[in-house]
Amino acid sequence: MADATAVTVEDLVAWVHRFSEVIAEHADELTQLDSPIGDADHGTNMRRGCRAAVEALEATGPEDVTGFGRAIAMKLISAVGGTSGPLYGSFFLAFGTAGGATHTLDDAGTVAALRAAVDAVAARGKAEPGDKTMLDALIPAVEAMEASLEAGGSLRDAMAAGTTAAEEGMHATTPMIARKGRASYLGERSIGHQDPGATSSWLLVRSAAETLAA
Ligand code: ADP
Ligand code: MG
Picture 1 (cartoon, rainbow, N blue to C red):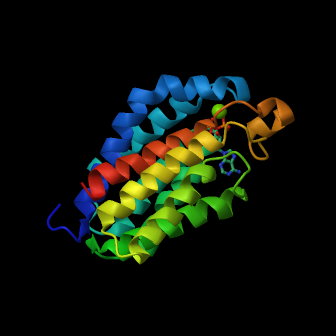
Picture 2 (cartoon, protein in one colour; picture 1 turned 120 degrees about the horizontal axis):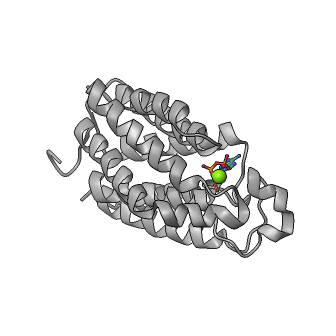
């Protein structure tokens, strides 16, 4: 990072590289979580999508935040089968649009872009908190980041608070009844299983903390 208050496009690219690494490390676990309440492909889907996103960034060499978001979004939408690809694609597309045609984001701009990204996932998937989806990790995370910045925290503080909130949100999906996606077909039988998408979303937030505010 060039200085303590700026997130550069290079930092954003490093975020996606890190996310891709941790997804590869956790792919089997994500697929196992998707087995009792889904179709056992979340780890495979995410690994394929992340690899494609990294390749797209290497091929494109984006110079601004909008270009960063676009390059990944197109790949995630086309390369990840299932529901999660288009949702993560929407996340990065909205992140880039909100961030704008700039090379760096300040702390508030970074969290505002994350807020726009999370709102885009909610709009696209029409899910709400408590539906047992990736939003149950993402919404608490961005709320915690906003609260931390508002209280005068640094981006590092905000990212740490966001990571903790995402992890708690992920664990909180276990007793929930799924109301969206494949898991919703199971109704009450979805109770007692941690949501795979909330788990990959926690990894996304944790990767951001490791690369954008390290
Ligand atoms: P699929 O369910 O099509 O096999 P994945 O297994 O890759 O796709 O992803 C499953 C995850 O997608 C779920 O664990 C859940 O977190 C997330 N998901 C499903 N539907 C929605 C939705 N409408 N909004 C937000 N997240 C969703
Ligand atoms: Mg699945």
